[in-house]
Every structure is written in C-alpha cells, then in structure tokens.
Image 1: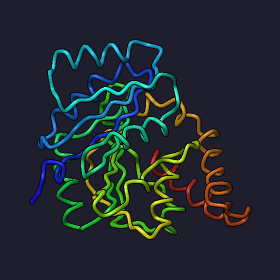
Image 2: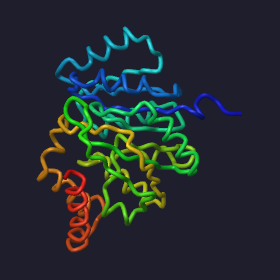
Image 3: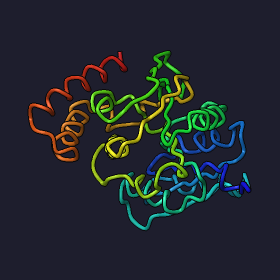
Length: 256
C-alpha cells in the first residue's frame, strides 16, 4: 500500500543572504501543479534579513509543508543540503537554489519522467535569467542520458533541475562532498557508482545568473573544476587537461 511519503518530494534549499530572492523562490514551489511536496529551507546563519523574510512569509502562508531549519553557524551549501537531506521525509529529493525559479509544472513533469524511466537520477533543461528572474532566451538543452565518463566532459546537469528517487538509490550516497563545486562532485560520485542520469529536455527552470557571485567569477569556476578532476576524481594531469578542455568548451557554449 502506498503512503504519503511514497509520492512526497522533499525540496531542499540552502539559504544564505538571499533576502532579495527567497520569497519569490518559496512562491514558485507553492505554485507547483502538484501538492505532494515539502519545502526544507536550511537557513545557514545569514547576516541580512533572510531569516525574518522566511518567518514572515511562513506566518502569513500558514503552509505546514514549509519547514525552516536554522544552522547555528554558517557551514556552507554542501553542509546545508546534507542537513536537509537528513531531515527529508519524502521518497523523492529535489534540489533548488535559493535564488532560482521553477516553472509551475516542474515537479509534475519531472515526477512523471522519473517514474516513466524508472530512473534513480533525473535532470531537466533550463534557461538563463536576469537578476529579476526574467528569462534571457538562452535555453540549455540536455541529453537523454549521461553516464560517468560522459558527465566528466559534459557538466550540463544543473543543481536546481535535479531529482533523485531514494527507492532506487541509497539516500546515503546523496550526501554532498564538502568541497567547492560540491554539486558537480555529487553527480560524478553517483554516476561513478554505476547510475545513469536521465535528461528531460524541457525548459522547466530559471537560472538567475545575477545572484551568483561565485559562478560569475570564471577563473574561480575553472579552478574549482580542475580541483575536482585532480583531487576528487584522482586524475593525472594529462587526463585532467583532456576532460577540462571539453568542460570549458561546453561551459562557453551554454553562456553565449
């Protein structure tokens, strides 16, 4: 017999200094065309008015599906997501960054897709957006599938598009490594363990570029990926350089 948890999607959002965006992000979850979700907001000791914005919204909405989890000190996005994962009650895990937006049908379409494919790991297409969340017309298309070797050269899997089915993958495997570019490190870890990532080639997410200072620093982004090849994956210099060239070309193409 199916229980509520068999259909529940736990949406995990690490939250830090996003008072400009967080209400809109919470609203995009509440506007979903399916109601079987819980929203786990892991507040990572913000120094602005983020926590108060969340609390005011929760007081007004009176929506029991929204849960605020407060960290006593700032520990970074990886630790915040891992705490959300520990607290999650649902069969399905979805990640959402605190300044990104979902189309109203995102959960409905991705749930149907992950069930149809009997997949453990799914991701979708997305569109770059400006600081106000308006689409810029640059849509990133995704392949039907990605295995580990393919993913090393193709980092089109974007955090806010991802969903996992914990009936098909051990929840413990979904803990993010505490390392820069922890999301990419997680995808590679999962795929290295023999799983396939299934891509739903539909634009269901708005990736707000203006709110991501780290991602806007291209040199730092390059350094993080290089570090993943050399340290997280244990590749030699030549092998790392080979894969890095493919990554760089793909990253440029997605942003032009």
